[in-house]
Amino acid sequence: MLRKLTMLLLFFLTINSYAQEDAWIYLTDKSNVAAALANPITILTQKAIDRKQNHNIPIDQRDVPVNEAYISDLKIQTGITVLAKSKWFNAVHVRGTETDINALSALAYVDSIDFADNNLDTASRSTTIQDKTDIEDENVVFTYGDTQNQIEMINVDDLHVADFTGEGITIAVMDSGFPNVNTLGAFQRLRDNNDLLDGYDFVNRNADVYASTASSHGTRVLSTMAGFVQDEFVGTAPDASYYLFLTEDVSGENPVEESYWVEAAERADSLGVDMINTSLGYTTFDNSNYDYTPADMNGQVTFISKGASIAVEKGILVVVSAGNSGATAWQTVGSPADSPNVLSIGAVDANGDYVSFSSQGGAAQVGYQKPDVVARGGAAYVVNQNNTITQNNGTSFSGPIMCGGIASLWQAIPNASPTEVMDYVRESASQFSSPDDFLGYGIPDLDVARSIALSIDDGLIEDFGFYPNPVKDEINLRLPEILSDADVSIYNQLGQKVLSQSILENSQTINVSTLSTGIYLIKFSSENSSQTFKFIKQ
Image 1 (tube, rainbow, N blue to C red):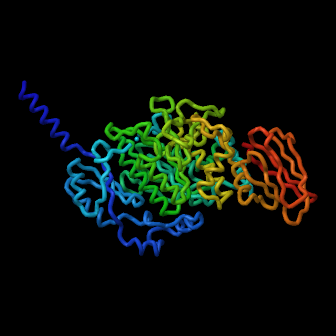
Image 2 (image 1 turned 60 degrees about the vertical axis):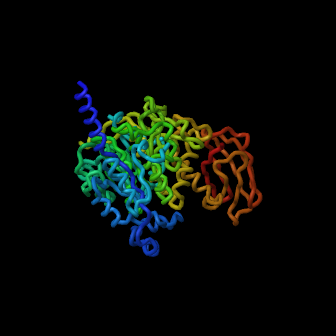
Image 3 (image 1 turned 180 degrees about the vertical axis):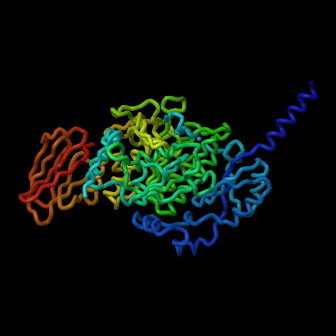
């Protein structure tokens, strides 16, 4: 009996010694940095360079690729498999035994090692994927059909009528599979307009992003933005351009998927992408030693959340589904939705009411609100891999519905920065003045967001001007130089006039401190013209 126990103990020790671990290897330096920064076209596309210049985003050392000589050397180290790389972090994701990975610290170009199992690190970290598919079963005139409710809920239809349909905005979609997007009728318009740009499968390391049929989740996600079936189905940004990146391995849960995501985000940045949409989220893994905790959802712990924050620094607007954990013990948003720099989207039903699966804000998000806003994710309409219009539940769909809507908004206000666009979206939402952990700032009105943006730039809206917006007490008013007087009237959402005043000078104010919080119209009237705009009273 003793001999059997001894043999059993030796067996488990042997298994443990050969257990495969995941780790990030952080490197000391990069090669030819000065030359690359002096000639950025060697490391970025012209579209990426132009986007950064337009938003005053510096091109820095993080844009320079990882030293390929280091990667080649890592690949020949004993027991080491290289799975992914990140130029932003100057890191490589590897797999091997704990012993073989620790041996890499002897290499001159290795700065530090961070194991996915933080118990193996010499210095521990503080913090799973929850928003998976587990819950998800001239002027433009569209007949929206099934998508009318989810379009009108966030007022994208008004943007479409004004011919803002996402044209000129490029979106990278990070997901788990896009089967049949290259053949389905629902994406024929997308293909005919040459707006289906390219793709890459980071899991299987090939360019055929449509080949993997393990999951059709990405197909359904894309349809909420780009799908078009005449008189039956219209996405929120049918004329935007799309890159498709497969970063999620549905066969299991492993931290390498975070690395795939960051690598895809870096590819998106180098291609000049304007927005990233992702319906993925990370909280727990197949190996429980890698698990995060709700306390880790502060935007500072997980590799993917830190990568998403860098993407925003690089000038990309990142829209993330909040997660489907609202009715579970986990409850709070996952990563990268926990990053304060991304726009995290929760879910409501067709009536605009909170749905119980939508992940909530939590104690870990100190000083910022999650989710940010919400859209329809309860029984949302999507197109599946069989070209059938159907309904699915999940923030996986409220997220892209909102992402496409914001793309249409951004087309209308192209000079706005990503962070400004996110601010306008929050400010237009239904409970901006009293956010909570269920709906965040509420349901946005994206046409109101456009009006807010147009009024922010030095308070000028075409010829007439007012600022600030939103406002607490006083609105500053301005007239065109050619006018000496005008009348200003304010109306509530019922169309009732609640204030009026004459402007007799070039600059004057109107006191709105007595108005209730909400959305109002302000109308400027002169002898020959009038203009009406929306504003928010806080």
